[in-house]
Amino acid sequence: MRVFLPLVALLILFSVPLRAGLLEEFEEELQRVVDEVSPSVVTVFAVQEVEFNPFDSFDLPFRFPPIEPFRQERRSIGSGVIVKKEGNIVYILTNNHVVENAKSIVVRFDRHTERKARLVGGDPKTDIAVLEVNAKGIKDIDKRIAKLGDSDKVRVGHIVIAIGNPYGLERTVTVGVVSALKRSIGITQYESYIQTDAAINPGNSGGPLINIKGEVIGINTAIVASGQGLGFAIPINLAKWVMEQILEHGRVIRGWLGVVIQDITPGITEAIGVKEGILVAQVLKGSPADKAGLKVGDIIVKLNGRKLEDVRDLQLSIMKTKPGTEVVLTIIREGKEMDIRVKVGEMPEKVRGKPRTYQGEDLGLTLRELSPEEKARIGEEGLLVVSVVPGSPASRSGLRPGDLIISVNYKRVKTVRDFYRMIDNLKDMGKRKALLLVKRGDTNLYLVLSLE
Image (cartoon, rainbow, N blue to C red; front, top):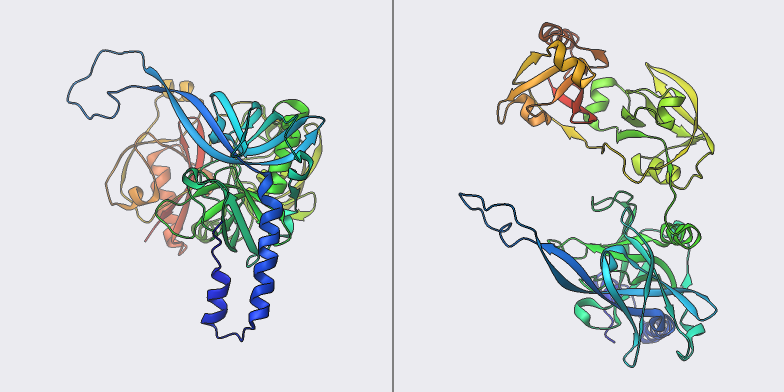
């Protein structure tokens, strides 16, 4: 196995005095860790059935009559790590995207040993899946169980080792450091990735990221195709929680508030004068948050007395809260701090509304008021955006034709005259930003409009 040692290059670069003995000790310890952990790393082969329409890839000037998509098999390869054993059954963590919709799954333990696997459960919201394999007869299976670490103790700069099967090259080892924590890259709903420069490539998905003690601290899951030295791993504490949910319930049971939320951006800060917290853009009707009295425009700053860092912090905390548990949200409403008690619900399988954040720069749009029929159908009052000039104020703010502007800086707007009077008042007050609450389809979101 080849091991890349960027640490040595760093030491030489900064002219750190080295003894041959020190390098040998580091090398021996690294080899010991790799030898200890490698038997727990497996190759996962999955055969998936996907729908395929040959005409989807062509931009044709005419349309074919609707046809049923073809079904074809796709074979995928990934990695996995053995994390638990009960009797003759071993449980393997891998990525959900490696085995999702698989007709058959085979796990290779080594060059001479393969077993059929059963998908116990998968979770697309975190990209974690759990496989079970009857390992009866596999030599030294008890020694193949990986030790799981504590990802909450991981720090930027820690040395890490990735083991997996990039491009089908089994048990390839790469070494690097943790380069960032709590990363979000927009591929799953719940993200708080460990970022590393240890080389991760296609086929590494589902393999372990381990620390220098030989403990699994993450499950390798993603790369940035256009970048180098940018690999991402799911923290093992999150993966363990998902696994426990799947093994106990057959699925993941999540806590749920029923709100669409977004972080406070510099533009929002300038518009409303609040620097920290999580902005509530929408409260789903009949949800736990709705029943507790949470309102659009509230700013959540604490959960059970603990200061919240960002949207991910609140999402992950509520996700792990058992449905039926009462929590206390500290919010800021119209400049006043107050506590609201919410009984956490269970997240439905499908929740309408997805948080999105848009920022803009100028004005330039055509508005019209809603007809009585439209108000009745939509169930909301506001101004309809008829058109947006490309490159104009409204365009750069993120406004789109069909959006419904509900309020300006928390004040409801019903007429076009109201809208422009509010904008003029903000300019007179020396404000450079306006905060618009916009309804887009079934989802509310805040947009920041520059008045300069």
